[in-house]
Length: 592
Image 1 (cartoon, one colour):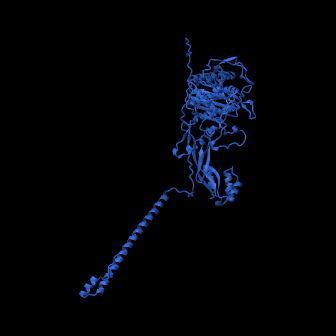
Image 2: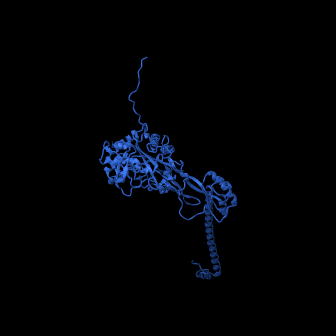
């Protein structure tokens, strides 16, 4: 800054020349300098005051807006921030093929305690034990008065229970929001859905994870936010599932069986329309896995895919289909059935004497072990194994259930000639009912391999296993079995049902077979002339006591149950009964 001198020389000289006092010039310049300094300071102060005023106005405006926002917001309890990954609780619904809810979510609360904040621990323990009878009052009191700072009391609360706990009024009892999995249909389709539980848990949320069934198989998909909350659509039909389950449960009680399973499948797409395993459970209260005893006795055991059994004479259909496909025989070819058939130290017998010879069709209709073994001899062990492999009997079923891989077929250690003979009529190889359903679907749909699926939309047909001509011949034979063979009790008026019975003695744990315990199976296709569905019904240790003597064969036990299932389910599937046309009106004219 350049300052003007108080005594400028030019003015001093001029003043002296005029005889004026030079000191007046200095005083005047000093006065003007002070005035300029005063004006500058005033200007600076006014600017600062203006800036300060603007800042105060802005601050008051922000505070006012925030107060208005808080006043308009819904009040909520403050939550402590925690580090770590957020828990994603949202889980997609599961629906059947028609959009009916099978599994959904329900907002609820969990109850936890902070003992240091409790006022009356003894009273709280006593009243909680009254609300929840499964809680022990003394154990609660010990936890509340000990050194614990936090403990869960109940993972899920009903609204009524929550209100009762709230009425206790102790600040040490707190609620945490939860999203629980709800199965509104209870036990229906329990083995398909499986069940769920809590994974990672926090005070304000919990992770819902699948424990079994499709809930576990599609756990990642159901929890993936990228799906936008779209439901998982299964191939099940809820109405048909309910009908099948009701009939099977009644048949199981009527036949005094310890367990049962039924599978209804689309023969073209492999879609499982219904899958029932009894006894079952409620996935809302999924029981614990058994730690001792036979796992198959647990209600958690899925007999449809985990149960691996010798399926008896239902396998004869595959032997005959292969013999027809390879041109070894025709349906009318006569087979030697004189018995017993001796192979080394083994003897193969029929259930009863069917005579010295039968046609290939009658071998299946009358269920001749000897006739089927004769056909297996012509096929050979190597070709038999290859054919069953193409049908999927040598590997686990690729079904969308976590339990499916456990149902691995039991094969003979060496595929010897005697193994070939016994496997031809259903002994020596164990498979699941789902294997059997897929195999019959393949033979019924024109010969294309079927892969079972629980997803709506189905899959594409696989490789051709048998020709259309072989498929048609097998369908005709299976219809003969029901119309006048071993499965007449499965015939349903109005619906052309074809099928095959199979009765296998249950093996003992110590070796050998039980004489009075069997596994009865009936595999059906309908309508037999143009099949759309396959049904497999299996009863574990059935016994029909309606006659003078107990009857355990599949024709008396599994077949009638399957017939009733078809009678109930076919209309629900949109199949119209075929009405036989009358030959004449039968009207007699009479004169008055």
